[in-house]
Length: 461
Image (cartoon, one colour):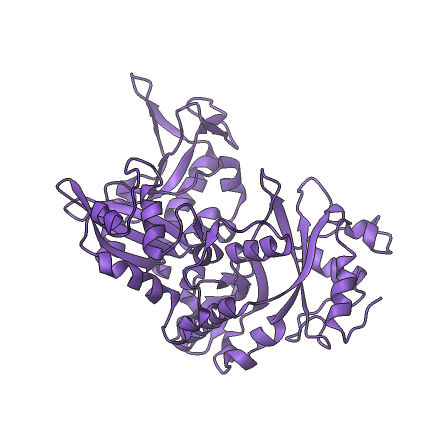
């Protein structure tokens, strides 16, 4: 079928899957076939298409050719383009051994230097055997990406050496993350070498944004809307990080009004437009207006422009995307959108009101520390409990205003829940009707980051 010693031969054989399903591509009777675990698609592909037994070896799947097979689900956007449904999980991090390794000779690099990627269209209504395979190709990291991935790997390794494996977070790094792997049960915890506290089992993973970049390349999608901060990757050899490069571009403008920055950059922007600050950020970074920042997109970095009052308190709390009530109660914490957001890396741009002007104070890369994530988790747990019990509305006032049992800002230092909808009729379905009102749908809500937390833990630190 293919030459096990030839990467090209294996890749060509894999490409025959494009447009097919595993049921039609494999010469097997699948009538009684059932899959229960999340890795089922990859294992099925290995066993029944490539005809080798799945294993968890430190070597690549096709070790003679130095090629690692990864299967990953896709979703389709409204414009027909494909995007990744999730991050791409690679190999488990062995805390007890990895601290002895260097990147170039590491088990991570030996296994994942050359990937064979099979992307299939996920459809929860279908058996996985009937998912259509849309994209197949190999991937080697471009030089500029590899420099960042190496730094990410070294950051993860240093945290393990510092006895902080239990504090690892996907927000620590740019393209290569350390995602949790396994259930929340005690069996998913592992010993670490320089601390008696056990750490959750984690695996190296490519951030979802980076997987989208791979998909766009394989699908040959138009990527002109992206602009690069780092045009010459060699610059990463003489500075410590992307963070330093970005911050150095903003520092000359610290203390200056937005309008003056605009003039110095030769711009004439509409200050009332929603895109005003995004355009100003792009201009400072040397990108064209309207372009997405390629390095930020690959790293899933959330850019937040914050306007501070004169007392350093943000003018507003920070909202996150709305959650669906059904999904909220059906998803455990480890897989929740809220945890994913809290483990993200953020880029904050702080402007402060000074009379009629908005003054650029500073920019900051930030991700939430482990202990704060656990504290914010209490808000999520309270929200899940409230919705699961059908105890949504506490009272309805004489004016028809509904007051809820949802977590309030006064109850948690970090986060709270409140509406994020066009109006009260902008709703999501409830898993259980509300006991007081009988409502089966409720106004869209989301988690918010408290303005006081942003001031104390992000701006002033």
